[in-house]
Image: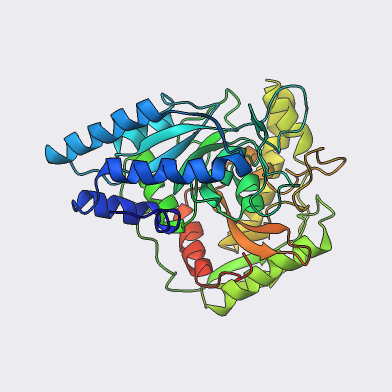
Length: 386
């Protein structure tokens, strides 16, 4: 039996192990999930809609499959599904095949605004778990909030300019953008890739195994040798808020103290991604390709002598529900949707004003394992204020 007090703290892999071992029934886990949602949803607004009937049917199907002898890596794990993906999207379908139980559609930005770092529900905007006056980020807004508040241990997202990493940073959860092309893109330009939001790095690794149909990422361990990490507070692109930079840099120092990374600081100045990203989204490949090649060469050059590039996830703390103003929240994330490099946002801590900050780590293409290894080491240094 799982209690209402225990459920919000249990990672996905623990839930799955207990369900596979017969110590928990999927229906029991689902009951705990909906109890938590009933308690938290009015003050978070993470879900656009809930799916109790679909979830009950999925939980019963998981139990049937387990009795039939199937091995389900994520058996009985409740998940939130990004509303713009839905239950039939590639990512959702793979997770359901692995035994997940979808509980509802999480919020994404509504119409009528150019900025995407917020979430809309029938009851109003999604509220940041740290401070209801703040946005959760976006566009995977509700997914991040639902994970942060313990409603689900993992949720689906998609990242075309930072839409997994930004809400992960502002809600103090883990958000992974895999290498572009590793999973089917969600847009014609190839910028938007599926990615999970979780509370634990190992859960993100398990999701990546499920999505890729491999066992390449599971059980990430602290690296055997220190990974060389290059720190840049702004990539030469953003005037990063000093408190945000300080908080992210302090998190990187804690990570370095574990021996998992060694940090080098040097001036970094990447080409501006904005015209390239805009041209790609508009289908103007003639204009975009020279810009993409220049940006890709610049990032590859940085990663020739370093395993990781480390930055704050966003140059700004979470903004209010009125919007970001003139600040470009994607300034430190969207370059890597263009170049295709994998990136993860890991909770870094809070500013002096209590605003959540993410540490973004970027690796060579195909080296998600380096991100996951560093992330596991980072979890052991967690800021107690978060």
